[in-house]
Image (cartoon, rainbow, N blue to C red; front, side, top):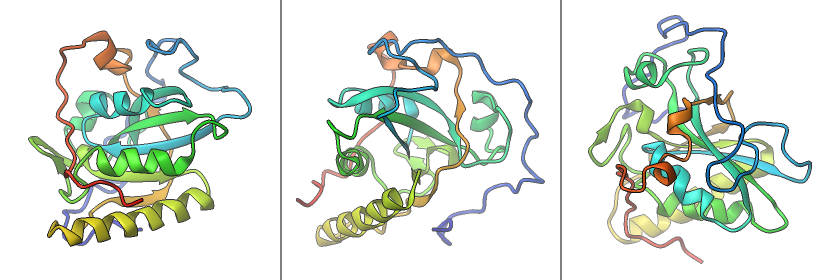
Length: 211
């Protein structure tokens, strides 16, 4: 799925900041679950990746779900190598703020993660979520295989029907193959567990996912 035509174009690879070879350093363990934050993960685990606005609140939404082994926040779907938060927020990297979810498929279906995604934010707002404005807040599902792609596209169709039935706008979510994930700075990881009163601008449309 390409970027919706009603949204401004993102900087091209030639226009984007070049970045750096050195990856940002993150903690070894998840602040909430205590499991590893980086690969390798246990063999049975699967990966999912979502962008749904400011990644602080988005990550919390997923780490609370039973069957999630680990989560991490970072940057994806842009061009700049190992970008910093400041660079991503400048709009000059084309990256999105995303959550990487490591989950056990024997305990948690990918479809459930999609439900959390759709109902956890407003997927009709283009390059913003509420008062958070910028291409780094765009809605996105980043798929690790063809099955995830098919499930994501079908879930979009179902949720669009539910939104349309209540007079809401067209979904602007990008659904593409999972791009390279760059870990965000350590202080962003599990931010709302470390800072319980911290900012969270996440809010849904008030429309349930159809069952």
